[in-house]
Amino acid sequence: MSLTIRPRLIASLAATALVALGVSAPSAAALPQSTRTLVVEWAGASPSPIPAGFGTLTVGGTYTCTGPTGSTMPVSFTASQFMPFSMSSGSGTLPCGPGVVDAPWELTSYPSWDVHNGYTSVLVGYDETGFSSGQFTA
Image 1 (cartoon, rainbow, N blue to C red):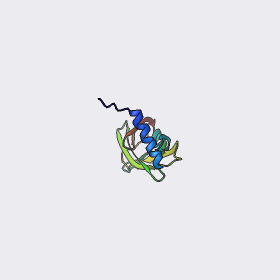
Image 2 (image 1 turned 45 degrees about the vertical axis):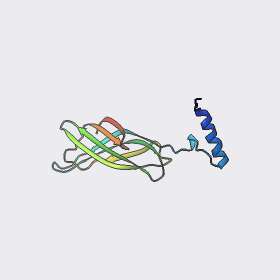
Image 3 (image 1 turned 90 degrees about the vertical axis):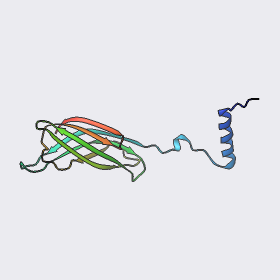
Image 4 (image 1 turned 120 degrees about the horizontal axis):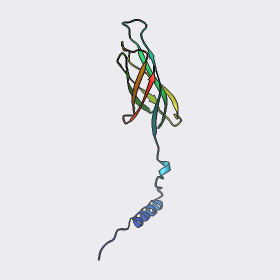
C-alpha cells in the first residue's frame, strides 16, 4: 500500500482547521506592498565664484517610495563632468510613506573645487539595489 500526498486536500484541511479555530489566513491583498523607484531628471552646477573655491552639483527628479510612514530610502550619487574632468558625489535619505508617489527630490554634492558648468553624467544608487542615470548640461 502506498501513501499518496494530495496538496489540494492538505491545503483544504489546513484552511478548515484554521476556520474551526477562529483564525483567518492572511490574503495576498492584506500583505503590505512597498514600491521604491527613482528617476533622475536634471542636474545643476554651482561653481565657485573664485578660482580656488569650492562648488556643488545638485541633481534631482521624482521618486516613489510607498512603505511604512516614517521609513526612509537611502540615496547616493556620483557625477562626472568633462572638459575639464570632475567627479562629484553626494548622499542623503528620502522620506517614505503611503502617499509618496512621484514626489520631487534633490541632493547636493559635497563641496568640490572642480565643479563647473557643462556636460554632466549622473549615476544614482538608491535603496541599495536600484540605479538610475542620466546625462545633462549643468
